[in-house]
Length: 333
Image (tube, rainbow, N blue to C red; front, side):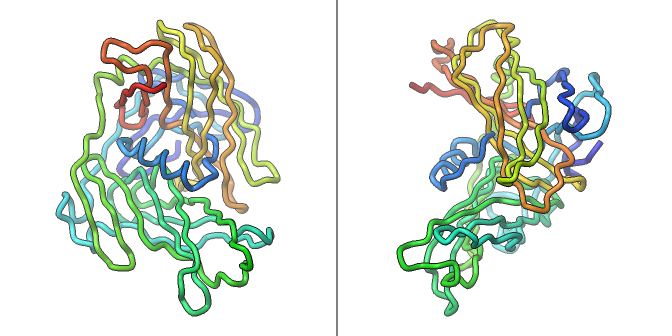
């Protein structure tokens, strides 16, 4: 069993790597989201899922299945605590360049590393990245985001990419640095400006626990394909509908860990195939990971379902957060 963070006490689902063994969640279902390649999609996903927390129950490679272990989730207050935290207290991440690839003449790609030096797991992280020339001038900007975030005392890797403007080359970008970032805890939202060294924060609603009990209807099995030459780690996910309503859309977010519980990447899987009660559907997640990464465990920390008709609350789309055991509903076309 791999401890994701000191603030999380989570029951792990486990499997043998590359052999397609299955995991049946017990109590609270745990499932294992395709790389959101464009900055706008990353931003939108972060804002839509900003009500989620951190943590998951991963599938651990090369271990046995434990079908009866229950899961729990705990967090502690951040260093400064509360919505009135100072910049020094709220600035919990050390952000550095982990990997840079200039091999494509039109793009700069790579990974930044986020190290959470606080005692609190944080989620819905979004980083604004500044690209600077040799004189320190900002020549471009982009965003990278992770809904899962960073466990307490651990690191997470976020992919970034930027399309170079006409006349620019990789050599024209001397340095790549974080200009600002946002994150949430169970109770608060924080926005950190690393240039001005300021912080904005406000209280937040984590979600609906009663809706979780009604809408947590999926269970999952997995088959790990492995890391491809493209740098994406592939996992096949089979979802089973244990509810009473047909689902016309299913989406899932998956997080990958190394042996130390650090976050290697977050991916996406989804389908519009009709999923009837008792039926199953297979989805594929492709998660970008650093070139030197060795995936030790993985798990889906949230999923979303859509029905053809709204429920009694007027919602037809629910996002279920398995790590915090809450769900949020909305009405979508």
